[in-house]
Image (cartoon, rainbow, N blue to C red; front, side, top):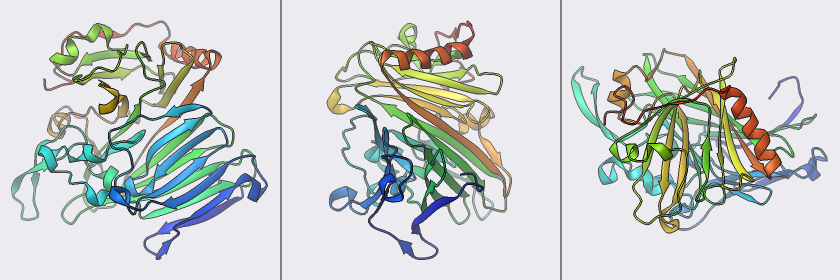
Length: 399
């Protein structure tokens, strides 16, 4: 938030200073500014959700449920009458204490996966696999890197809420999450989730800092997930694609229909496509997921300078098993880290260096609104056609 604009601020969690607020709320009516917005903090009790903190950020038209306990993920949202997110077999947020990331050969992350937006990283993301590190005794050692890293299962250490007291009355939830270890990474994620009253969009602003005294590897991917009502048979990905390649032979079989979705199908095997996007003169791009009728859509805008690689995950399984697609801009592709390192796609942060990234997510309801979003995508595309590769590309995929 612009420091020149006066604002209201409330600290809901501060580990260092012993501050913890279990229940709190604030609204536009109470502050007498900005209309029908509200921000509410609560804690869940019972089952695997026991101890999970939730923050509802509602700008009057668009509402989000943020989960500080799970790395500042966004569980789900609603824009007017349109649900944002997906229906996972995991129905409630799972406290990280119940997640064993090494379970099922490194796939334990999936036991808590139900968010609309979840970060993958920070020291690694992608498929589980063996990596080689130098340990504290100077020896080369093999270790298991688990699926999509740790950040989604680390509780925030500090959470603040800020409200601008002058137009446009900006609403912000800020969280700080640390991924750190003795003889390991020492990374700090500072995240701001921002919207304004009456808007159809929100933005995630992230800063990742290496607090260690030696260079550190860093990877981040925004796993943005959507199901019904936006995802249905005939839904489409509309994007200014420069190049697309299937991850493996399974995806290759459907490369001609990579941007079109089928109905829920029991036993469906996931299809993954790796892409590079075109951008405007400032390096920004925008991708759109629209339903068959082109009257419901979600778009994601971001900088290809910050997030140069894009992954499309299609998992049109049965409704009971999680009918969902993932739109995933990242610093690399979600392969094993050793493969991404080999191809120069792992970021190296010097001591004290910061990396900035983020996404803006917009909801579109009604044919006119979807058409306006589509025109922005087409403007970036500029009449250019994507290079569609029918087999996995050696540079993109180990398959």
